[in-house]
Image 1 (cartoon, rainbow, N blue to C red):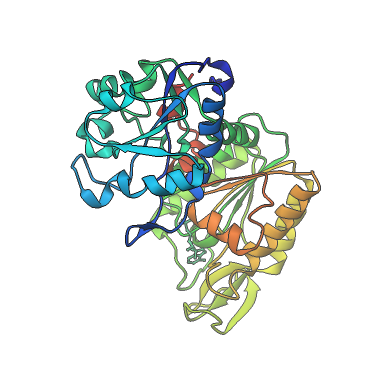
Image 2: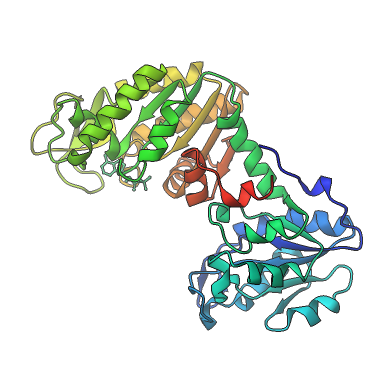
Length: 391
Ligand code: AMP
């Protein structure tokens, strides 16, 4: 799929309505993490450098179509101004007047889109109202692209539309990882439950050469093969589904890699007494918390031979020492291979980003997506309405 970028548009003397994600954490009226705002700067700077005027639109929290004062973007406006180093005018109410008065270099920030019930309904009327404010529509919010909302989907059909810098960067990285990747491709999928990642596994077995299944979800696959997993987190009712995924993988020629040895404990807490045993020997009263060193060595060998890797989910309970060891050991290998230019590595999803950062390799992946739901849906092979609308 192809999409237009800022380079394909003529912004001179034009107004650009830019959908951004500045849904940042706020405590006592103060923004505590400006990372998301920093990431929109390239697009704002570029449009202004090309002679365009920027009107920002975004959501904040979940006001569900009602005006909720604590979720007003007025709270975020000063942080946007600080980070961009530009005066940012927050507008609430009569957008048309504010837009008519804009001068070159001005940045406007519209009120929380989700205060209007039309936003989440992908309402044509609301999209038309927004579209009337500008000449060009720019979507720079990949993280909101899995939702067909007025500001991500309907509006793209009303104005000339393109992807912003951040959106284009994200789509480029994802395309490189799963769209047309260099082979062999490895996917590492871990985390708590299979039930939340069924579509993901189903899509990946048809696309990658090796699929590592780790974390709590690996237990479901072990149990489905008749292996005792003791008191481990396990979705026994998904045994048939797990077996279907295994046979789909076999016919697609995708190697499924499950734990060969496991780290077990009897208490869910940091530094709980633990031991490493073969995956087939989990005692009845124990819980599996991590993959063992033999499994890690095998995975790392596969990563050594791979050209592309995509990761969503940890191999174990990485938040509790020492059960982070398996996840950190493979992250170390992935970062090393990426650094020497042998691997394209893409990771995403809330817990995955947390694990990568905790391991100290946050800057060493080729690309880390901070878009939770959108990243997952893209990995599931689903069409994202906000991206499709740019095509
Ligand atoms: P998810 O949100 O599905 O990616 O799951 C991430 C969570 O799975 C993390 O909080 C991990 O602690 C947890 N997890 C990973 N491995 C296990 C395991 N073997 N048993 C229980 N929880 C696990």
